[in-house]
Image (cartoon, rainbow, N blue to C red; front, side, top):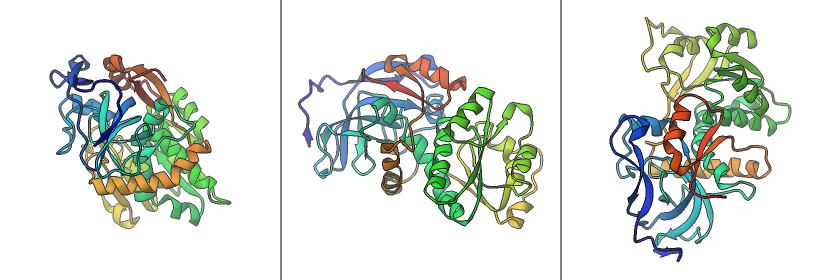
Length: 354
């Protein structure tokens, strides 16, 4: 493979290693070998990565990496191409790239498949670029794949309900709904956001949300039905799971779709659940986990997303939402910050000054 002459990598690299599963104190910075790219890989000198809930779950011992992926934490990165595999001809040494990985992003170097890599828009820093892949990919496949957003926007006014709306995925989803409407003359959308504080809801409003529900003020269903004049929502993005599942079913409109992305509130639905509305309203309910998808799926998603969204980032119709940047060495503090639900947008870790 080809590589840049950029220091001595034979001594290894710094990476976040786990002494044991459990709390943040088990994450330490240690030395580990630099990965060697295979034919379709590019080796990236990581400039920034981001903290995802999946990283926290893996740290606790409940989310092992897919077969063949690095055991090192980290699912997304932005950086510079340091080396390329023998089959790589679309990337050059020194190119600025970003993308998703199955693991390994909490390190100075990481491998990225050549067709899952995206070029970093000129206007973006590495810290901003690292905040894009996981959040926007997850929101994009939920809205455009499962939710069929473009078809719904073309058909008339659309209502979208976003749980955990101030999260990385939530803030991406708000913008993607707004962008779909912008591209369709005469289109309109209700973007209903649920978050845990007035400050987070105001932040959602600044991104384009139109209706707001504080999750700490009781059931959300009555307000959703009020906002939609009892019609319900066309699309729901849910990260909470069991405790809100019954309300979600009731909140969906006829022919509505729900993308289930996580179980922040637990995976068990309390009490008894009546499933009749799934049939009577012809509902589509689909779970989605990006990390465990096939390489071909990730390549296709990267291609589709890049064509749709990267020009919008260049033109500043979409933006990376970075709540806070921690130095890589303060990884324990970064995880604690996310676990405390303090962030609105993404929490990034920088491996170098930019």
